[in-house]
Length: 585
Image 1: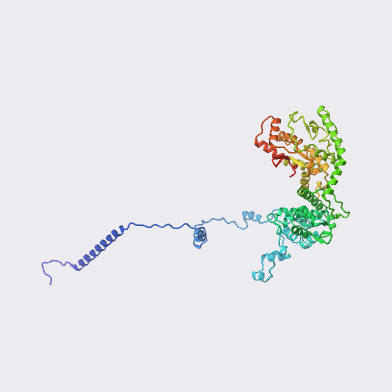
Image 2 (image 1 turned 180 degrees about the vertical axis):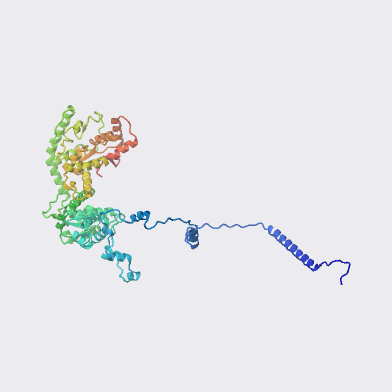
C-alpha cells in the first residue's frame, strides 16, 4: 500500500547514473593518454626522405609490354564510330574497284605468275619436322629448286658468280625452258662481260668494294683492275702469259693465278688458254649485244692503257673472228720503232710547220682574207702539237691585241662564223640526217656538262652512251673518229692546240683537246681567255692566270669567279694548273 503523501509514482535508476559516470571517466582517461602520446611524438624532429631511382630503359620497356599497361591503354582508347554501307551500295562498289587491276592489256609480270605446285607450296609450306628430315647443305651451296624460287636477276648473278665462265646456251638450259631469252640477255649484261662469245663474270661481282686479296691484302679496286686486264687480253687472243700479266699489273703471283684459273687452263710450254671455245653462233645471232659489249671493252681498254701506260698495238684478227697468239714486244723494240717513225716524219713536220706559219702571218696582215687549209696527216698533226714548245717555258702574257682579234685554233677568229666550217674542216654533208642530229645532240649535251674534253675521253663517254642505248639504235650504224670530231667542231666547240712536252706519254687522241667556246653564261669571256692561255702553255700557275684574266677583262675577278672558271676547264696537280685530260702524272 502506497503512502498518501506522494501523490504519484516516479522511476529511480541510480545504477544507470553510476554506469554513465564510469564511462565518462574512461573516455577522459583515454583522451588524456592520446594527448600525452601526441606530445611525445612532437618531440621527434629528424625526418629521412628517400627518392626513387629513375626508371631504366629496360624497366620502361618491360612496363610498357606488361599486361596491366596494355589493359590500361586499351581502356583509354577512344571508340571510333563507323558507318556501315551495304553490299550493293555505290560507295562499296567504288571501294571494291580498287581491288581490281586498273591496267588492261599491259605486259604480264612473269615473276608474279606461279605454277600450281608453287602456289600450293606457298599456301601450305612444309612442316618443321619435314624440313629437319632434309639433308642440310653447306651455306654456300644452293640447290636448283631453291635457285628457281629467286628472281631472274638473282638467279643469273648466283650462277655466274659460281661458274665464272659460261656459254649463253648453257645458261639458258640451267634457267629452264620457260624463261625468256631477251630477259636473260638483259640480265647477263649487268653481271658479266662477253669474251670470245662466252660470258665471264664481272670483276666487281667477285671482289666487292670493301673486300681485299686473301694473298696480298691489296684492295678490291686494284684486284678488279688486274682481272679486267686479264679479261681484256683474252678478248685479243686465246693465249695469255702469266709473267706478262704480273709485270703489267704489279700483283703477286697468287692473285694473277686466281684470275687465270677463273677463265683459263694452263698448257705446258704455251701459257694459259681460254677455257671455252669461241662461240661463233652467239656472235652471229646477237650482233647488237656484241656491238654493245665491244663499246664497253673499248672504254675499259682506254682506262687500262691510261693506268698501266700500255702502248697500243694493232693485232690482226683471224677470219673466223678469233685472235692470233699475243705477240710480246720489248721496250727496246718499241723505242726503236718510235725513233724510226720520228725520223720518217721529221721532214713532213718541218714543211707543215712552215706552211702554217706562213698562213698565220698572212692572216694577221690581211684579216679579211680566208686561207683554205688542206687536211694534214694524223701523225704530222700529232708531232706538230707535241713539238710546239716546252712545258717549263714561261707563259706568254703580252697584251698584243684584244681577245676577239686573236686566232682561235690557229685560224682567224672570223673563220668560225663563215661557211667553211671550223679548223679548216668543212661541215659534214650529212648534217641533216637523223644519225647526225642524234650525234650532235649527244655532243652538245656532253659539252654542256664538261666544257673541256680530250678526244680519248669523248670517245669513252660516247661508248658508254652507246652501251646504254637499246638494241638496233641508229647510232650503232658506225661513227668514225673523223665524223665525231667534225660534229664537235660544228657544235660550237674549238680545238685547243695544247703544247705538250716532247717526251709526253699522251696518246694522239689524248693530245686532241676540244673546248666549248660559248655556253651562254657570264663566264664565257673568262673561259676563252683561259683557253687562249693554254694554247701557248702546257701548265700554268694560278697567279699568272689571275693576272692575265684581270688584264684581258679589265676588272679584278673575285676568288669565287676564278675558282668557277678553273673548275670548269682545269685540274690542279703539283701546284700547277692543267687543262682537263692533259695532265700526265
